[in-house]
Image (cartoon, helix red, strand yellow):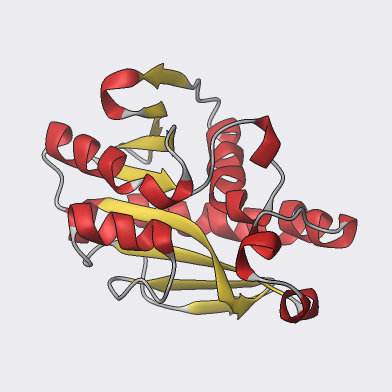
Length: 187
């Protein structure tokens, strides 16, 4: 079993923000597999179940805010008796990577990302990460919070839907088959 964990904030207010890139990708993955979301209070999350090439995967959208998502990951990991190093993939936006970059890592520090800091505190630093670059030149003109809680331009949104998300879905499917390697893609 695999856990595909989306970083983001709950609620319509945040739905199209850069910080919800992980959720947008996991929702697209769920839609591609006709998965149905349900709220599970004991996990503090919305979850959906899919089967990818014979492997069961639990898709997760935490119901806590981005900076507090680690508890949800811990509750799910403990309940399903998962090994974070091999069974958990976290998908999150990354300010340090240019928009259109997808980078896979299997461990690491939080690099100032408070959501990753929360995950590291609850499940350790060893889990797969699909980092989705959101940096653009506008980032240099505003503080981190305003930038990540801002919405994508129309051009960026189109690229997210048409180019980035399909590649991310390929990488998620590779993860469910234990075939994902640390790598970087620029789209």
